[in-house]
Image (cartoon, rainbow, N blue to C red; front, top):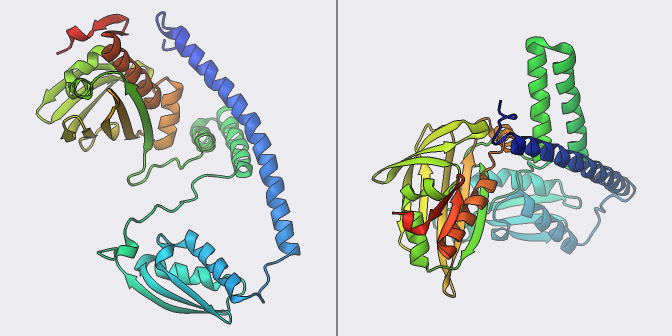
Length: 354
């Protein structure tokens, strides 16, 4: 019924066909990348075996190696003072206590290092120490290299085919689900589970030829959103809280409650969902004057049910937050610049808004 709906079925079938075409192109590109990646890795390993790092090198070379490794091992490598004397490495300076042991072990394994003198000043948190402020995010190595991606997508496809076509039953369902999840992990190349504060981040910037107060006023009146936003059906406002009804994946209705966290006139609007919502998300809209026009910056972070797998399924069914945001921002721009726009097969004039 979803794909053969008289009104939207054709568009939905076309979307699935586009996804299949994209998957074919992705597979071809992945094979090429995997072959090159494997060749380079084998070449690098061969050269490392044939020409291992020398251990009898000047102290300046060892210091360079130490600094390079510390840059990947700790969050504040510049806070650590490194000195080398005849292969003996002396580490000084402030460091977060949770990173100290890993840093010492990392340095101790470097070729040419004969001994490590640990004189680091450990701190449980950054506190008021200038060198430990502004902790940068280190890579969590969540992206898989092309060679591993190719092997994983092949294994996932075989596992899914085995479960669906051969094994069947409960075991077959589990095997098929595991295979599908593995393919989704490779396709999106990010962890299936969105732990902690991580989520799907969507960003968009658009320039509107309208005064900043007019643009901000439109965004401030949430009850106007159902008029020009295609997938917003209804919004009920109670103080700083709002209760939304939107069109979800496969035409389903999704309800959630949110609260306004920031409201700075002509500058910022921020929001986040209340606890225990079906789809948790938060975002911020920033407004910036630009020579008589207004530049609107939107950043949305959302955590879909079932993590990245849920995000992938929603995209196939046409529920892509980035695509929806792009469409709604274009309608907003058209409404403010020309005085009217179209949504839900209807024409809306700016005079119709509150």
